[in-house]
Length: 395
Image 1: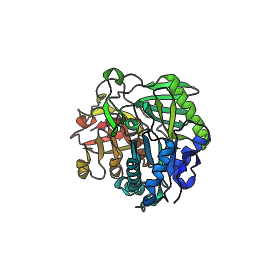
Image 2: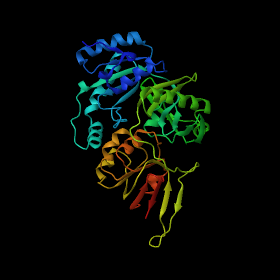
Image 3: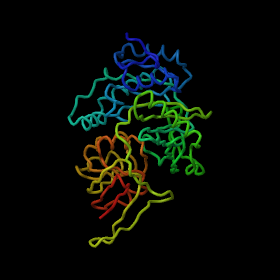
Image 4: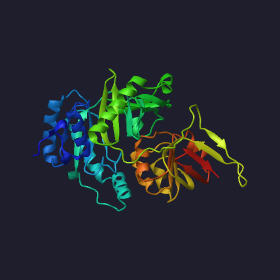
């Protein structure tokens, strides 16, 4: 039986995620303790290995279980959100089940579609033997999110609770830009829901109205995050995409680091703060009732096509090549649509969500955070999405 590996001893044979986290721990950066279950560890030996590792880690700790596959977190393809992550897992049996789910997701429809889209060919999905799994103490986050380094700036996005709200694009996150050691831009999002640990794993609940429109971080923590991001980038040798969390004591934890696979759009324009969609009438000689909506330009480029409102997987069959996907949010299960549509528009989500990252990798124009887009663009006919300007216009 191949032994369980302490996280700080992870090497390249354990996948990029485990390797990166191990390097950060060895450098003394604040990474939660954990261990790696090698891809070579078969199911027969898995339970005994998990049981022993949890004895060392501490059985009273809920854990996060994440894949560390050979084809994710790379310099050209992140596979952001394409493999399963399970949070708030407790006990040997539950961890074994979570490990099996991580491994099985490597051959699931979203990972397979992503692999085909990024490689240009319907590549063979790796078997479970190609997927090591990282198990770490779960940080009960007061706030969490993602930061990107590069181009002389650090962009931080955050929301209340665990970072799933941000990476899944389920909220309109707060955003800060840091340059030259100071905050040069800040935007407060409307954070209506949060994800927290629960006895069943995680639960989503409403954010109290008083907290929805106030920043979830102060500038001091934002600057600490930016400084940590620079240390990670220096250690890893290039711009980094870092997931992080801040606990109730104000301690910052680094949960994941991988190369930035596609730069953030330079000229994106985002909607003004305030309730409701920002919409402008844009008359033209041929049409007097055109509408222009503004959101966050998350992936550059310009494309036109029929607006296709999709409210859930039951609507996937209605999507046709060249449609503009319009939805409330996109979770990873929607990735197969990204290889079909011409552009993406969502009502929630930020620059650093998984959907935005994948859209940039696929060079798919995307405008996120457009309130009421599904209502305004329903039956809108042909629309034009400008991912650089952050606008969506009807004819």
